[in-house]
Amino acid sequence: MAQDERTPSGPFVFPKWVNTARPLLTVLLGAAGVYGAALLAYGLSPVTLETGYAPIQPIEYSHAMHAGELGLDCRYCHTTAEVAAHAAVPPTATCMNCHALIRAKSEKMTLLLEKHAAKAPVEWTRVHNLPRFVYFDHGAHVSRGVGCVACHGRVDKMERVYVHAPLSMGWCLDCHRAPEANLRPPEFATKMDWAPPGGEDPAEYGRRLREKNLIVPSTDCSTCHR
Image (cartoon, rainbow, N blue to C red; front, side, top):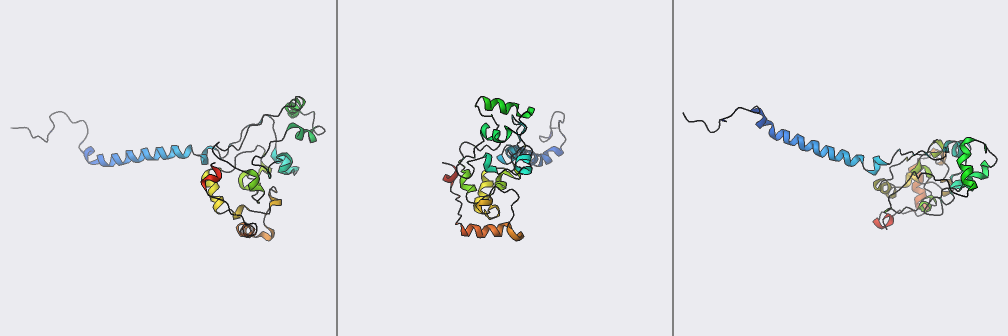
């Protein structure tokens, strides 16, 4: 009797139902690969890579105490925040305006005193660091009434400053397209706990400010990528 061509001559390696399930297994393996690639891409994106970043600084400096409890205005230390593209980090002389008399003998002041005596800056670790191919004008935003909290969060409640917002291109474009909720009178840009008068909705209040001050943020690529 001739052997049926459809009957394998050797022993079975896999059960017959595998042939039926093969298309489904192929789809599942392909979906798992796509899911893994998407998860990796999201994990390495600016949205997840930067938010929450809170580096340890060379001096234990509490913004919660200085900006919160003591009520220091952001511009006392970051003097160029509303007039230049870059918000300056204060020199040791600015710190010594107060600490020459206040807690000058504290161990926490040791490095500050050494740097001040050597006329050298404290080597702070940068917290908010955009890619080199991105141009951002800090003063242009503050002078038009974009509050510090819109990008930096409630710094006056942070013991150690951390990245509050993703600072991704999509996040910036969302604000440029609809900035109303982040607008306030420029003179209150650094006031952390500012709220629209009378409990008005921030977006509605900002809409009027936008019309009054002719604020039309650009969404052209060349605005940030020059």
